[in-house]
Length: 269
Ligand SMILES: [Zn+2]
Image (cartoon, rainbow, N blue to C red; front, side, top):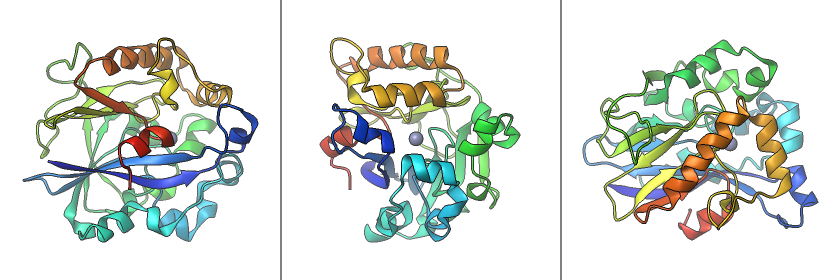
């Protein structure tokens, strides 16, 4: 399997200008495009999509003000895919880490793809039980009726962690590791089979200093944001601690969705 690392969205959050440890840094939307032998193209997360670009008001005024997304055509997953010589229809599967506004935007660009998700996340999106959840899950990103494939925990553990294996129609090297807390059904997505085991940790952490280094460290704006955004902060911190352990495994290469520094190291396009 060949894996491309893409940036499918750029955000320049207001608070980044306030912290010395985040000088002019921006947030990216780290997306994986996987070429598989039998399952076509697989996307892990989708960033922002063409519908968000055509009508940014759909993302909500609050999000636009705080996150300041750049919404560039050339950064959409669809643009990247076409630039790499593929077609929209070649994307047959999508595996989101969760369904937040900055992760699900590309779903409508691939309406025929099967979307493999941890069931509690789809339930949370559909229920919209709290105001925060009605804001973070945007209706227009799901209005096309995604072809959901919903999962509960199943199969062997992954380095001691609960996992979801045997995703329908996907190679066995792809699996989900539930890491709830940021949202109700957040997962890390694992891609085995290469020289390194890739772990896309989504929004389970936001800055490499939270995972790597001798002790957990997080620039304060990101610490505050993560706490406010979490549906279950205790679970989030517990799962983040488990990811810190996992990242120490020599064969594991872990990265999150939004840290630009991590992404450049991996040659994000
Ligand atoms: Zn995010």
